[in-house]
Amino acid sequence: MELKKIKKGQEEMVGFALIIVVVIIIMVVFLSISIRRTPKEDVFGNGEANSFLESVKQYTTSCEQGYSSNYRVLRELINDCDVGKKCIDGRDSCDILEEDLKDIMKESWDVREGSFFKGYELSILSDDVELIPVIKEGNTTKRYISPSSTIKRSFGGNLEINLKIYK
Image (tube, rainbow, N blue to C red; front, side, top):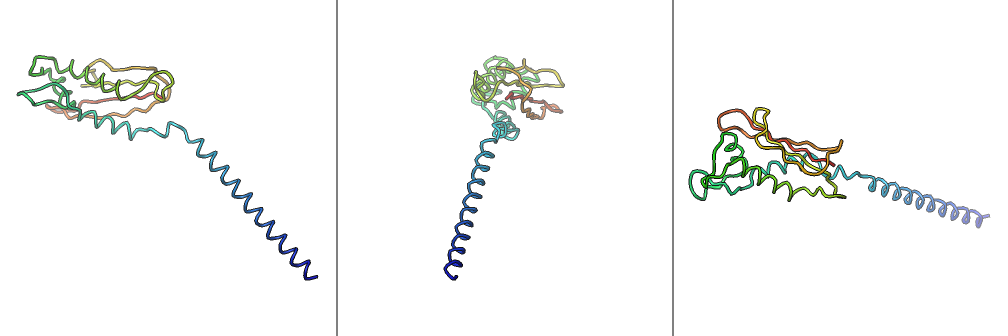
């Protein structure tokens, strides 16, 4: 009789261990499925895009103002373009602004076939009028993030930088 109790106890312990193993396996399967389903869209969001815009405004351009070696950062060059200033070497500040932004966007956003990002559009507005032509490349889609940033004008008001990154 006592031998039957010991065997019954052992069977219950083996059964309990099997149940724990099955539960652990099920948990691992659910965890791996949930990790795989994390969409790529969540990897890059408005926070990163806003940081990109803020860092672009600090980019040092080849335009000098006032005296030699006084190179303008993009934020200042946007203001110069708004008021029609020229660089010390006679080049138009709006032309330099457009060239530099095209280069920055092309180097920063890979929008080739098969890339994660499908396209982009960048515009700079002064009183809802484009300061330079819209810089765009790639395809537009229904899914995009759209950060924006403002720059204080030298004579009051704000200039607006709008970016759309298509996924």
